[in-house]
Image 1 (cartoon, helix red, strand yellow):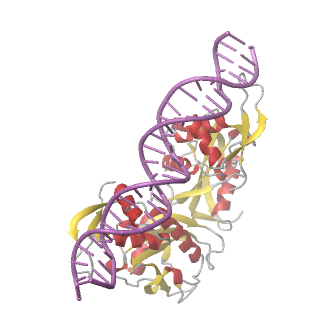
Image 2: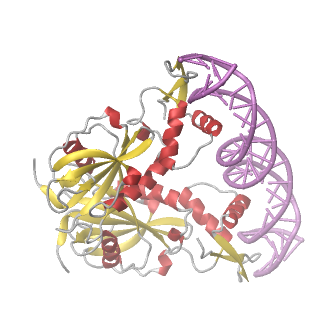
Image 3: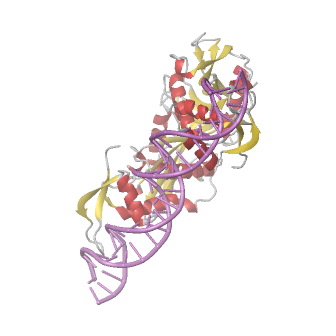
Length: 212
Length: 212
DNA sequence: GCAAAAGTGTTGAGTGTACACCCATGC
DNA sequence: GCATGGGTGTACACTCAACACTTTTGC
């Protein structure tokens, strides 16, 4: 597969939204250091791939997830962040819907799994810092579009979208104001179709608007 | 000085504001590739320094500038960005006042100098991309405080501050609205002292407020 | 008819923007 | 006294936050 840049890695903080909860994707490491500990999926960058490609490849190799919108968030370059060797690591982030992706532990991952983000304890290296940085990144980024694409089905009722925002932002949002806002800013558009089979009043479907 | 990480570098985009113009700091390279071309100051990260330290050191070694507030902006990791070897480079930025710093070409810089930013032609590697990314970073960051500290003297008249903003943002700003805004948001506070020796009505001095 | 979720409007506060004239000084 | 840059206030539009009730369906 080519030569590694042994002092440069990529770590991926992947968040999943499911059942109204925000989850993080972790892998169980199958080698030292931190053998058997759960950590963010990450690995070396190869000489013959861009860092964006590296992020995609690493995420796929370790977890089976592909075709998500990964964004570079920050570089972590402290001296002691990795015990064996000096490694500078570039943090990439994405937000997806777990149901849409099948997990497959690969390369140096023994297992892959989703964990409720606020239940996560101490992670090895500086991965807790990475999660925190990613969460604040999420809060800023959630009002832009691309990040929502791997998260939502084609069409969805507005109240589900609101729950998502509440989970990410960790705060209650006024229902009327939220609807006005997302419609006004052109984030979503209303469809004619309605939900069926609920126990209550059906809701109109909405979808993300294509433009901008 | 220790061992270099030969695939990882830092480049610094330093902007200077002087005479109402935005300038960029470039060095004339004294080795291949791009020998004798003007480029952003940049170099390798050492194994025993954090990336923030590397940025400070590199800026100082090449240009003589120190004690500025450098911020990590983005990582550039394309395959062909550097001809000799695969190098991933972390872009750091700062905004300073040229008069306050003495330039001293050091290590692999033959010369150091300021160039008007909008007169800069083609730079080697991906340094034009870096300048562009830095400029958009500047436009966002200019409303926060830390970035202004190396830029302004202890006290300054408000209209000078406005010119600065206009230069960075590349747009006219309404004088009354600007004053209201910077005072209201607590960015500056008025002093009793006034300018002297101008040809016209003296202006009150202002200073950056210490409190966040 | 009742339980459950969907949906809807108005008001006040604060913020951003547009706009034109008088003021204080040096010469 | 005039040229020069310093300094100020008001009105409108927009955005945000707060707030409670009616509607539609399944059972």
